[in-house]
Image (cartoon, rainbow, N blue to C red; front, side):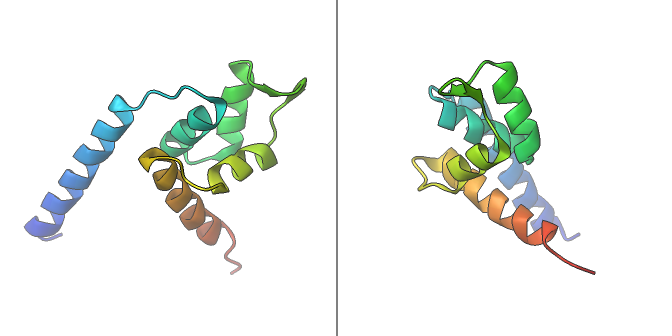
Amino acid sequence: MLVEEAKKRIEYLQDYIRKIESYTPTTMEEEAVYLYVQLESVTKVVQELNKKGYRIGKRKLTTVDVSNMIRSKPKDEMHEMARRLFKKNRKRGSRHW
């Protein structure tokens, strides 16, 4: 890796850390987006949200619920990050060898 590439990567990671540390989710959707950016797994996000007691009506959340939240129109920068990661992960996961 070239030094310039390494510097860009470090800058990207510092920016990522700053965004994560400064973000305070206040709604279920924001919490889902925030967790997805960190965990990059809809299943893990669903498990965490259900543990925290989030519900839609009286039922627990499903992967479809969380996927729909992430795919919805971005409301902030964190949501946009989650959407980009989700699209990238969907493409990677749909490859057939």
